[in-house]
Length: 350
Image (cartoon, rainbow, N blue to C red; front, side, top):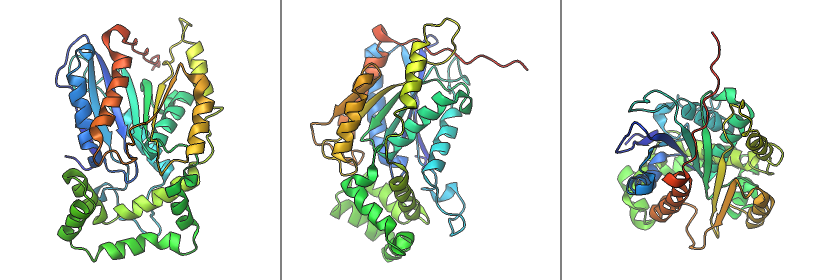
């Protein structure tokens, strides 16, 4: 298992199928290893669905930058951890560089790309969609079809119960800038095996989550990266800034699809899955966001969980969330409703 990405290629391939990339962006801490059971369960569900047999799905999960010591030079006061803007650019670069890996269309762009994010990964996915729709030249050939946003933290995160605490830490003189030093000093007192035992036995984490958590806590820069990114989230993720940008762009793209000479891709269709009691989401802002978006019902689907699934579903609740995502995938791509592949951008003359 790679520390920076997970890949689940299709177990079957056909010459007449559409190729779909499901690109997953994790939350904070941005380590894709937390999501191995979820992505594996989704792979199994897709492969066992007969109505999806005409579509080839490839699943790619990508860690955020800076959470793995091997992907960067050591952080210093001059070379600080990566902020939210860097993470957006990082994900945009990775997803735009992926192409079909096998079969008759090997090396070509995917027919459809679905961005899926968890927590702040949802914000990154949504902002990536926004930037590509606004300026397709940022990712030539990237055919975005949908965004699936799980427990999304996309609106006034600092007003959520947990966000309020982290924002107070960020705004506290001296303490905010040195919180990572305090955390690292404490964690250095723990031998690896003792910390693993605490995470697995006392916190009750299953094996995959205990291993990822312990490696993160004992890494050189992982805790600093997590705190730095979290504090930047408090600063950046505020008012819903997509009111006059993303949704209008989507509407304009939709209305222009009937033009035979139009080569732009159809707009993404967004699926939002909110937790019922999510301590990283302010309920009143969530409800207002849903109310404002109700007019885009053709392009948006909102679900507020009724089963009390936790925000950190990837620890022990991967299967029910994978089943929810699978139901959306079936709705979009089962054979009777298979959407046409977006047209490729026009080629440029040399």
